[in-house]
Amino acid sequence: VLVPDLIGWGQSDRPVRDYQLNDYLTTIAEFIRKTCTAPVTVVASSLTGAIALRLATQQPELFESLVLICPSGFADFGQDAGRRLPLQMIGTPLLDQLIYGLGAMNEIAVRNFLERFLFAQPDRVTPEMVAAYLEAAQQPDAQYSALSFLRGDVYFDLTRYIGQLTTPTLMLWGEQAQFTPVSLGQRLASLNPDAIADLIVVNETGVLPHLEQPEIVIGLLQHWLRSRQP
Image (tube, helix red, strand yellow):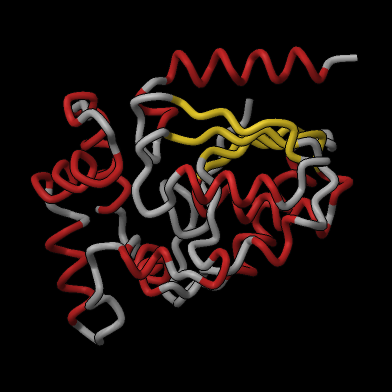
């Protein structure tokens, strides 16, 4: 199992520049080619899940299957879900850097955001999770990729690509996911029932069911992988 940090995030390189969608499409494709024996099963969530799906429509030979957790391009069906994030002032010069410093690099703010917006059950947010988010946010030049996301520079309409998908796909969705609700997942899955084998709703979780109920998500993933074996 390989768990990469995408460019601009975590322990990967963090070039000082704005980031675009092609940066991530290229990064994922090159990572698979150079470190894996394709085709592979990719597990990804949120925007990264949507990017993986889009890449699978362009280079299907790289993918054995997809397991996507609340995937969204944040502009699906022409609706800009990302702009409903509680950071509407991102994009104002200097102010965005200030907001990043006050929000993403502040322990209280990070915990509050996780509890209010990403988790269904606030008591599932652990100190280790908060520390991991803070560590990533406090890396030198980490703000450039985060601000590109918050400004919407990497958003796209997933519905323009999902109908082209041929890779067998399992979708998992948090029952109480905000910004990208279960109804969005149902609409997306209905666009390509041939490729999207199932949409499973994980009860009592938000947009990060793999963090809230990891044992359930691991079980679903194991069942999916076993079902894919010849």
